[in-house]
Image (cartoon, rainbow, N blue to C red):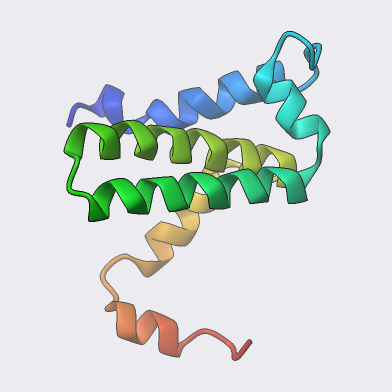
Length: 110
């Protein structure tokens, strides 16, 4: 993966932010954000299910396409909730080098 590819989500987030205040009739992104975080979260859930189904059905091309849809909607959710990619990258960096078991054990109970 090139360094350029690694920043694609940052570029996507910038595009989402630029379209946040666009006319909802002409921008799907603006329409999603206008519906509020709960509606965007629901769409993320729908896209996650579609991604999982493609993985279970072992269709790599469709899995890649659904994964792209999922990532797009996740980035829109970040924007709708006031989260920036740097917040996510910091959370990932804080977990780097830790086992998943240790990371989960360190979380407060829900």
